[in-house]
Length: 294
Image 1 (cartoon, rainbow, N blue to C red):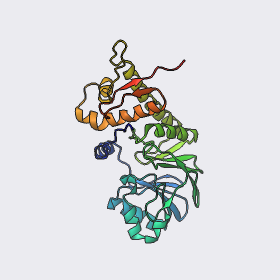
Image 2 (tube, rainbow, N blue to C red):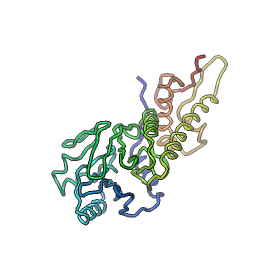
Image 3 (cartoon, rainbow, N blue to C red):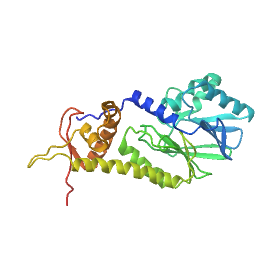
Image 4 (cartoon, rainbow, N blue to C red):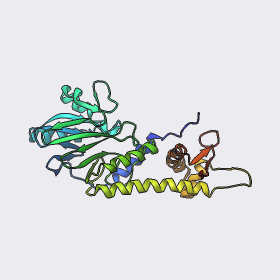
């Protein structure tokens, strides 16, 4: 069976740290709406019982800021909802449990860790002033969940859609399908896990969908313009496709960033019956476009 080229997670952690440094500096605590407060993560609700979305990466300053905010406003956490398993979203869980061990059973994730609860697609979580509906949107991560705030027609987008720039994905086909599902929700506002609030969600969704469609079309064009010999199908390796699209970039970037991403594009196109490949080692496997059936 042909294998996919995996992402180097350590490389992407370094990449995302660089991206984070380019984001605008946001206040530690901001009231974004009558029912949404940003504390690096999000608190949702209008009463004393609140829903916490994600827990950051485990920095003490985050937990101290959250605890102080809850104390000042006489609030407690009714639910903790985790958009996905990545460490910058789940790292603060131990601090929450250390302060309140009873909270463990009120932590929800699509694929729960021990003691946590599962999140089902469509499941609702309600506190005074807010009803959140879970929307399963895999792609950036296999367990990714967004949450629709019914009272605001707003979407907590996790890492699927960011306030600035674009993120990375584990499965492009699933991700693009999830973007389509998110767009059909018709939300006006977006609250992303990274960056400022999204004031025009339909425009942002259109931008994200177009961005990924263009990336796919560039791979198709590269294969169409690749080397050909009379009567013989030559095809291109993933590194060759990368250089055809991006030029002569450093080998480290080709191997650690471009090749894994293009591999995702190619597998999506293979599932769509638009490309094929010759058997062989992942980095040496040759890919070629398929002629559309009339």
